[in-house]
Image 1 (cartoon, rainbow, N blue to C red):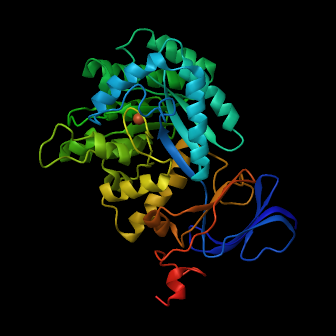
Image 2: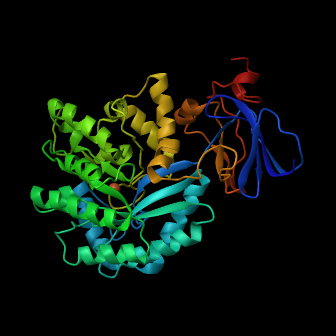
Image 3: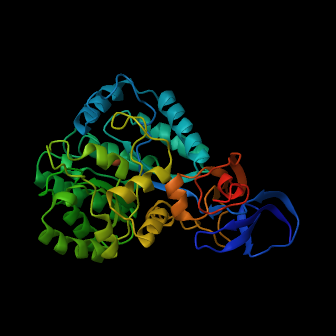
Length: 425
Ligand code: FE2
């Protein structure tokens, strides 16, 4: 058999060692030892070969705008929202597009090949929507980019937002967003969930709402979102993002809520890097962590993905497009330190998030799209621990990023040539 690319002797996430043969952009064969010619050989001996990273929650219209027009001095959510309000009128189509494309380059270098981004639809010009629709088209050969119509300033709280949302969906935005906890009243928030889910059901679209991104233990929009998911038959097509109020909710109430969410088929997308810095800001000590209840949701059978949310924007002054950073933070904040839980955190930033995004052609299996990442680690947990170097990134059968392997004394896998092995450690 002849292959375009042969990835030789990589360690798959399940621990098996295998060759992966790629032809015409697809995975043509996987086996312990593949025979045949190959246009290109990628030596992956001792390296983890995984499906690409997936970020199910991002804000690409704001990314890399750090310092424009000023820096978020307090680092708080409220100053971030005020700063975004100052930045919005200054946005230009070209600048949004240039920053988004630059971010996509970062993403590719990190093996991040699928991103769901929210895009603010409160600006009547829909400038960011148009810019990101162009970006989506341009990066389509290597990144799956989904857009969510996001009423950042509130669906009812800002004039024209309903019309803007519908216009954005007509233009090709994929998913219906929302921000019920930011509406004027709890009742307006509840109504917005119902109306927005109705729009999605009517148009056959998915839903992804910023939901209960607050420390208020009485913010209960997640309950409404689960209710509408079930009522409208949207199971598997709805995600609640952030859900931070659940951290502070009464335990008895949560014991009723989690089975309701599980029953509805709604997924959850916490954003560990951002939730750990933005939540609990009104607390003295002890300070709440503010991330939603990840291990409990997993135990209840709820699908969970981790998102990056922000990189160098009004809300977050750090970030590198590295989903291993996100997994690392999520693992720590959720105290998911058993071997099985740590392993699960790797799945959360790969296969689980891919399932939330509905990526049907994703994964290391014959016939699927040939997108994968070769990591300088012996297994998924080591990849998280080291935030391992991405040695080779392949997108749809093409090598799109490569880095030389560096010697390290930090690997327990004892891969050939490592400093640790040479010194007999
Ligand atoms: Fe967000």
